[in-house]
Amino acid sequence: MNIGFIGGGTMAEAILGGMLDGGVAQAGDVMIGEPVPARRDYLAERYGVAVSPANDLVVNGSDLVVLAVKPQDLHKVYDDIGGRFTDEQSLLSIVAGTRMKSLSDGFKHSGIIRVMPNTPAQIGAGMTMWTCAPSVGQAHRDTTAAILSTIGDEIYVDDEKYMDMATALSASGPAYVFLIVEALIDAGVYVGLPRDVSRRMALQTVKGSVQLILETGRHPGELKDMVTSPGGTTAEGLQALERAGVPAALVDAVNAAYLKSIRLGQG
Ligand SMILES: NC(=O)c1ccc[n+]([C@@H]2O[C@H](COP(=O)([O-])OP(=O)(O)OC[C@H]3O[C@@H](n4cnc5c(N)ncnc54)[C@H](OP(=O)(O)O)[C@@H]3O)[C@@H](O)[C@H]2O)c1
Image (cartoon, rainbow, N blue to C red; front, top):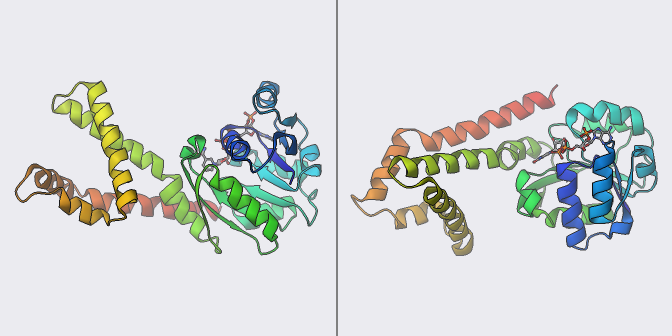
């Protein structure tokens, strides 16, 4: 299957790299439309793919077209390649916040796949939710799932309403985790650890705790109880987190991002 990219930026490169490493596509089957000459040269040199400044060439030569431009550049792309898709082609959009109806109207095409990845996709540890229009055929759905599984975990949903929830939890989530990790590092320094030691300890603690949940399959609350001795240090720390409203604040954060995503989608 020939795969094209409109936009050759950070996320396009993450998907391209995963796809080629995972053997889902060969370099010879890929063409990237990208306006910046230096970026085109880099992608052609590093990955051996075809590149072009002409998006219409990319569309003409591709079965599946990945749309990876910033939302503010979308209108230029609508003017450029709107109405150029055939019924056999699908357009896979990773553009944050843009609904399938807008994409379908903008490109005058019904075969839309909408994907919401997150930044850990850049190292193959992403979390991606995706959905597609009923007219997208099985072969393009299978290829989408195969591509997305090369950049991390992927979940298909059959209703676009879940994309606002994915925006709030998995797409915005890395920022919440970075904030928590930064605070843990600062906390270690506050009680007297050298910063580099505190950073190493905080990162391994977060990583190891997530791995423990994944590998034991136990409920996080059960694992929390197991490290909390009666009247001990962990109980004291947890009580401070409860007093500060940290669990409720995390729910508020995800809900605020969810409501914002719905508002942005309404234009
Ligand atoms: N980064 C994430 O974690 C993440 C997560 C979920 C969704 N997304 C979505 O993914 C999309 C891409 O994000 P990104 O971080 O990869 O952005 P990026 O690095 O800025 O990549 C966009 C690329 O598209 C190029 N471009 C601009 N106008 C174009 C046009 N008319 N035709 C073809 N290419 C064009 C840009 O070139 P110039 O440099 O000249 O503008 C740039 O190389 C965004 O819509 C974002 O919302 C990103």
